Length: 106
Image 1 (cartoon, helix red, strand yellow):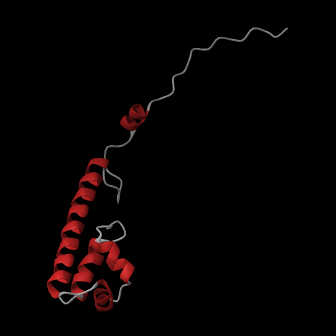
Image 2: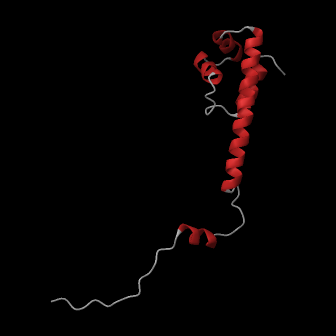
Image 3: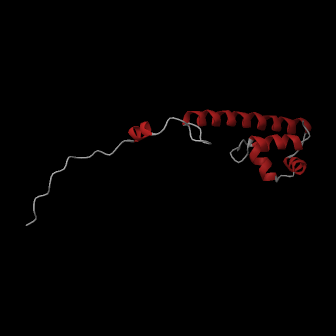
């Protein structure tokens, strides 16, 4: 027969909210608070969409094909195709600005 167990008060596991209240309020260098990160992401997505639209208009205005655009920008045709289809997750805003520069629009 086993000896009776000692009864201990139940310890609750701290919740995520409780732990986050214990964290220092100053921001960690290089890390934005979640609310700022989401705003920055929305702003960047909007900028990238506007740049991609400008690139598409520039290509259309000049009558260039995707192959001609790829040659002018030294990027592959599949890259141009992704850009024109709005698949912008692989493009930074800087890369899109460079794309515009290579197309001769300053």
